[in-house]
Image (cartoon, rainbow, N blue to C red; front, side, top):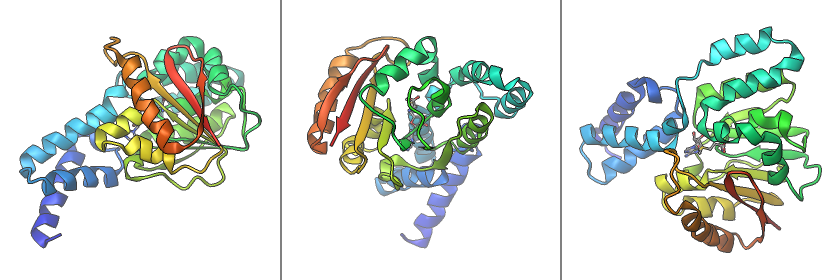
Length: 267
Ligand SMILES: C[S@@+](CC[C@H](N)C(=O)[O-])C[C@H]1O[C@@H](n2cnc3c(N)ncnc32)[C@H](O)[C@@H]1O
């Protein structure tokens, strides 16, 4: 990259990061999206708009409001330890994926982990606030690792999970660039995530799953759009999953989940 391009790239990244909504997003992802726009010949002003739009589609759109992480941690600390899971459940509905599951957490996680016995390490990819559902999960591994692109959310998940008694190790990672180190995970979760990755980089979801080493990979898809419409999503995602399954070469089992389309891919 020429010095001129590098300067333009830095300027686009700085402008995107100046917006409150993208300040806490992993800078490496912003830089990659900006570099893609520049190399497609998009002018810097327009590139800033496009990168912001992409970040909203991939992450920002899933927040139902502005998270109050500091206040929530204070509330968790103040709550009696037995009351902390209920406090968490009030907080995690800020993320729309968790809000959709909130009424059926036990049934959801029972369906998600059906057929999985005593995993020692779970890796939750593009986790959102899902790791905070640990108190309702029927399996309790020694390690639960989780990644996403929101640095403030990952910090909140790490702290809140310790307060709830179900600790989670979090780290930032851009999955569109490839899988993170699995560090001995026997179960990998990719919940409602592959469509987000495909939006950033067509085919990224299937490539990610095909490259995973864990014994089980659990993949889910939404059945409703964020606006609550069906729009033929189930048929589309079933078709898209066929490609993911083929590329992975794994054995497929369908899962029964309230409100989501889900599959377990096993070796
Ligand atoms: C539909 S939400 C699903 C969240 C969570 N898996 C769940 O089911 O509750 C999609 C998540 O993907 C994350 N995400 C989007 N692009 C990503 C990327 N390139 N790498 C890692 N995570 C990403 C978003 O921040 C968001 O938390």
